[in-house]
Image 1 (cartoon, rainbow, N blue to C red):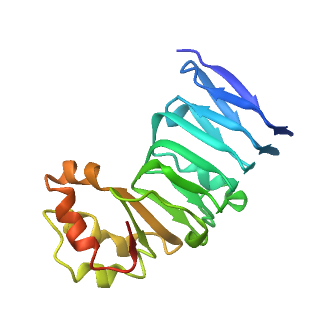
Image 2: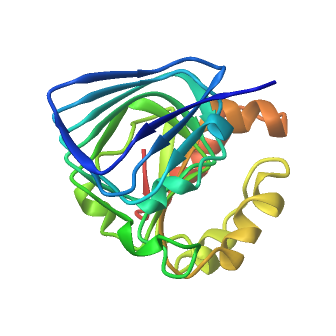
Length: 207
């Protein structure tokens, strides 16, 4: 399949609605791009979407198709942005040395309360400026630092052995990690309520 390449680069865009929805297109967002007060509608797979060296200021992202395994958010600066829709295994923030362009990555004052995050991480930035989704989502703060304490609990099913035991192996810059409890419960054949019972024991977990 031949893709159409669409470029947004080397300019400033304000107060516009950008629809990145054509599955036959590859969207290159950046470099040298600043978007302010824009709405971006995303309805393509992660492989069709490329971010690098772009600043998003007070933008809204409407994710119409679940965005999976999108790490290049860490090549963008996000300030005052709002996310809606489903994202899984995505990384945001500042991750030194991750790949070329990492120096552009940051996240501040962003709002995920209308999003569903599962396996998503905040890297190298202050998570207290970020609004995370509430239960049935939950967010582990400083998962590497808190991994030992979290391992001391009895987690349901294989969740502890597969997820919690692995936290110590995460990059040291991991500042927060958000899961969607029903999705994790379905995968591990447990119940969200069983997870919640353990989550409530820890001040380092927001729900």
